[in-house]
Image 1: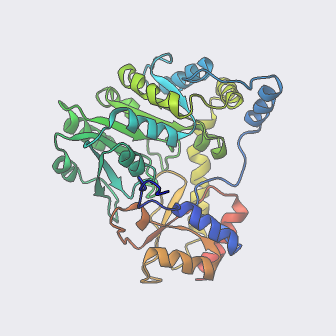
Image 2 (image 1 turned 90 degrees about the vertical axis):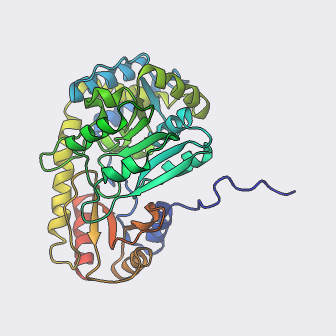
Length: 382
């Protein structure tokens, strides 16, 4: 038979999977894919065992366990001062990636346009494409990797349905400022543009900066899907539990898609997270200090290297400027680095639509101290 043409002809194995596989092959230290090499809080892990053993193993409600949604709403109030209705404005999802896909699918249609900022997380454009829309790319360029708001204004046309933001930003480690969000308020005022704010690293912001969640800005929140991740916050990325906050009219459309993607998310995981959130309110507030210590430890041990470093402002990623070491394209350089230093990193160019060469690679510092020390020693030997 003749098989149908691919709906995603330009999509192959992600750069994360490629580099992780190469790290295993070369027995390298894997600082490429963004996951911790340590476990989540012990109380949270024990709670999962308890709920599995006690029979919480059937379907959860489509929108998520009521208690977990209530705890999410309480957290939004505590962190950002926003009142959220847990009944109609909160949905628990099978990871943030599912939430992103559901949000795009809920409102984006054929011939619509969606603005994204490159380097962009690699799940955005495939979701846009599968919904028959066009992705409009606006580059974030070194050294600041900040948004050029005039380019945003110039890119908006009547077909612009959505703009996708990511703060703190993966892979650059930048964070949006209060001025950024106030500028955005002015730009979208009087339009029907929907916003998607990917805030999975919301609690990992450094040097006294404050995470500027779209939850803080009523004029933005009323037109936004705001996505976060328990996997990032609680060091359990393999659980794939996230959530989405949106005003009731948008959430109603979101849930129409969500119910046919995954319907619901693993019940014992939801129950354990809800219990942990009830008993432990300090974890998210301590996360920035926890990861800043790792960032500083890593960067301190790279001072003797030939890389140039501007400390990350958020996430658990750090960019390294390798231009004093090599003029290789970044995808070639990460292979060279893996083979010669035994450290796996991620190139930035796959996250640009035009394969922009910036001279930067990304590493993940969500690792134990011994791993970071060994990686630093290897990178300094280059």
